[in-house]
Image (cartoon, rainbow, N blue to C red):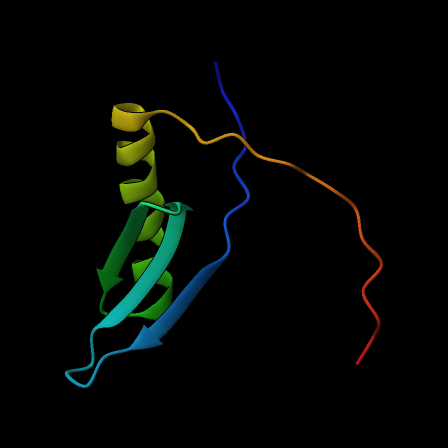
Length: 71
């Protein structure tokens, strides 16, 4: 079965120039990806999330619609 996961993430450049992307799959499972560029770290993060989900399963999610004020 295919599911779509919506995960917040952070991404930043390390002091050595490596880009690191991180997301929390559950409160106990954190996943990270890295690469030479922002985009490659996000692609690695997607791969790592898929591997963790294949091993641990997909977390339950609550999806809601909210109104967000414009800045």
